[in-house]
Length: 458
Length: 77
Image 1 (cartoon, chains in turn orange, yellow):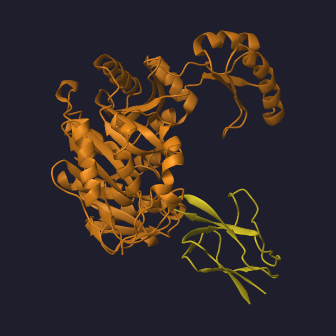
Image 2 (cartoon, helix red, strand yellow):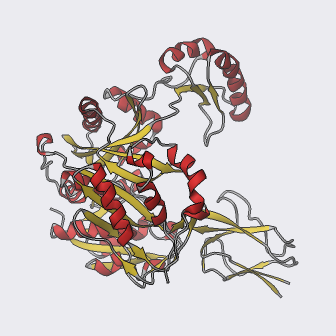
Image 3 (cartoon, one colour):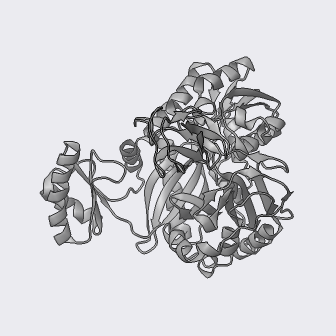
C-alpha cells in the first residue's frame, strides 16, 4: 500500500483524491500555485507545498517543481488527477525514473493511446469496432472507391498532413466523391506539400457512450458505461449512467470490447474507452481511450458502489484487481451536472469571483463534489468547474426529479453559474425521454440560451 | 498620461500564440480599437483593445503575468 501521496492537481479533483487517500490511511501532500494559497485542497491535505506562480505552465505543469515537492516531503507516489499532467507520458516516465509510483498507466500506454493512428490500430487489433475508413493513406482514387464499400456516405476525405480541420472535404454521394477526391489531393499537395489522403465514414448523428475500466497490468474489468451526449463545443456538461439506449446484448459487446482493449495493452489503473453509438445503425465505434480518471467518474461510482479513485490507489500500491467481473453490478440511475463559473445566457462567459454564501443540497441520493466554501475566491487562471452535482435514484425518472430538487436547494452567492442550464434541461421533454445526440445541446441552446440568466445572489 | 487597463482578471499575453510576434512593441503608436494583447480567463481568450489612442506605448506587465480586472497593462505618452 502507498504511504504518502502527492496530488499533482487542484480544484475539486484534488479534494476528491485526498478524500480517497484518507479513507485508505494514506498521508497526503497538496501542491499549489500562488493563486491557490487559500484553496480547499491545501487546507485539507496533511501537508501543502507551493510550486510556483499562477500560470499553470509555471506551477501545475511544472514537472521539476512537482517532483522536487514530492522528494522534499518523502512521498512514495503521485496522483495526477485529470487535465494538467495526467496524460503526459513524459511525466509518467519521470515519476517512475525518480523512484516514485505514478498513479496511472505507464508512459508507454499513455503514448500509445495518445497517438490517434496507433490507438485505432490497437483497438482494431483487439477486435474493437473502429469508425469505418481507410487504414492509413489511400493510394489514389481507385483505392478510394474500394474504401467507399466500407464507409458508405457521407464520407470524409482528409489530408494526411492536415490538422485543425484544414484539408477536410465531405462527400454526400458518389458524384461528389469523384469530384472531391482529386480536388482534395491537389489541395493537400499545394497546402502541405503532401497529397496523401485518409478517408473515414461521417457519423452525422450519434451518442457519446464510454466504458469505465480498471486494469492491474494483467487483467482488466469494466464498471459499465456512461452516456455523455449532452455536450457544448465538445465539452461534456451532463453525464449519466447507465445509458438508456443500450440493449443488454449491445451493452455486453460494448463493455466486453473495452475490457479486450485494456487487456491487449496490459493497462494498469483506471481508464475510459470512448465510443460513438449510432442509434439508427445500432452500431458503436471506438473513438479514443482516456488514460486517467475522468471528471464524470462519480456517476459510475453511484451505480456500482465502487470508489474508483481508491481502486486506482490500491492498484498503484501493487495490489491485483480486487474485483472480479461477476462482483460488479449496477443499481438505479445516476446523473452528474457540471456547475461551472459561467453565464449561460451570455455565451457561457467565464465568471470568476468570490463566493459570498453557499447552500448545498443534501439528503438521500445526492452527492456534491466541489472545492467551494463561503468566502472562497475562484481564481481566473484555471478551469471554470466549480462543482459536480451527482444524484442517484432507483430509476432515471426518479433521478431527474431528484436532480431538480437538489438544484432548487443549491445556492452559490456572488458568482454566476450554469445552474439555470441544468434546471431547464432537467425539465425538457427531449432530455426526459433521453432523445438526444452529441450535437443536440448546441441546437437547443440557440433557442433557449437567452432565458438561462443566472440570478446573481448577494 | 493615458493608461490601458485590463477589462478582465486572468493571464495577460502579448501575442496571439507562443510562436507569433507580439501584437505591439514598446514604443509603438496605438489607435483606438487596436488589439494590444489577450487575457485568458478560465481557459477562454479575450482580446484587449485600446480604448484610447496615443504614442510611445510602454507595457507595465510582462507576457504571461497574472492581472486583476482594472490593472494597468500599458501606458501611453
